[in-house]
Image (cartoon, one colour):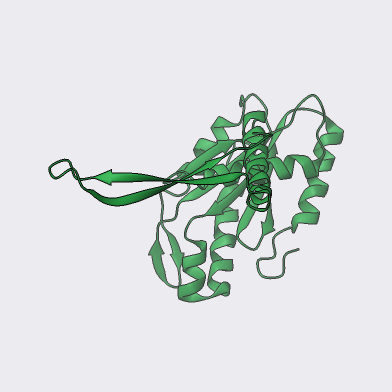
Length: 212
């Protein structure tokens, strides 16, 4: 268990997902993070933030007709949850309920506070992904969810994986480009249309990449 909250830690959570893998069926893994977590720590400390997580986990566990959601602590700033989908499509029912639990305020340091949730979702597939892979995909989706405003849900898909790979490729090649002198600097004049005088220059960098 995670010491601060008493919730199942990441190791225990992965064990639960592995059990679901063995039973077959369709289920989802979701990584959840509160947008206000860091601010709460700055204002009130980690103990108060842990209390918020405990209350959030209790509300999540009550979602669903059979209340079979398993909630664990994924990291210091996020929770992770999983449940089997029985006649619930791709989990939209659960995710809608997840959004509803933030409609009521949480008590933080004796004060009422509304929070926003960022959620990344990974669905089990016939290919039989491992618990670690499903967890990783949920974290990837969470990264995209955090870029959106308000309560946000992002589903993992192969396009996101390709986008992430492309971003890493560009970053790595750009680092090499500086050493290989693949970037030329061109000065473009800015002209005053009334006097036709050059008043400034704009520097433009052009990258000649053999790969991209």
